[in-house]
Image (cartoon, rainbow, N blue to C red; front, side):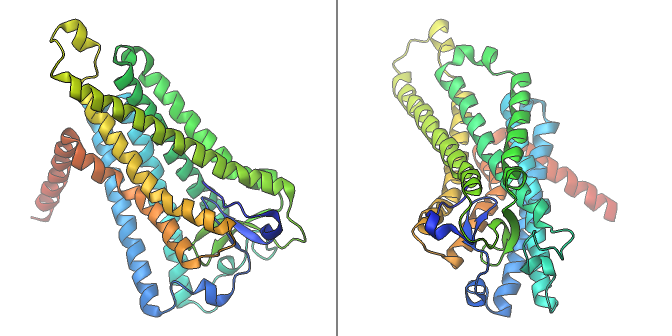
Length: 361
């Protein structure tokens, strides 16, 4: 999760995304409708979101079925991929459907439900859906970043210290790290609500998502400011470290590939080098990191622009949803780069198709 970091003078009244952004709490209707101003655009948005839900659910349920149902994937790396799939599933099951409901309500109901136009601190609203969905999307984003970081560490050990791989990377340790990743991510996601009464949640009309927001106040609260600064610090530090470690690992693989044809074929030398499967897995994790970083980059650009005083309503929408679509990309990467995963996924899909045809006859 990344929050924008406006200057203190400009910060009052701005809302900060549960995963990334800041917008004025009371945005003008023109700005709110800037990216989705016609009925056709609204219908296309809903169609896109429904297709995104289907893609996320199908892809990540398939990933879980392959990882949990195949002994070959019962490894530390497989556990981390399963954790990543669960985080993506939560986005498809909770976050995107709420946006679909909100957008359909805006089209069909007049007036729209109060929670769409009011923040969570409005006394008249007994329950605000964003109190759940905002931290869920924030937490899942943080889980994704931390899991990709752990995958990168796991592969870097396999590539840089192949003799220590089995002793350092165990399923028990990986499971413990996954649990801490989830607990830490969701604790950070709910920390604005727990530690500041001045931070609310709202359905933002630009991003079409639940955002953290600062209520109407006379001056910017220092405590809320410090809490929100945790988000960009965590996100950029962890993602930056992930990129650096991937560069080191892939550089080592490249150097090893150049020297491989000159190495002697003794058992001692071969044992000290990463295996072909380790190298291939490291490249897959590198691809995951590249795709996630590309999905995250628009948010980083938006944060910088927001600091400079730009609202960028349209751009905030695309930034958020480019990141959300990342929840459906991982299964495509696995299928393209991992032959064993692809074969197992094809077998599962074929089995389901055959059973469906048999049931219909």
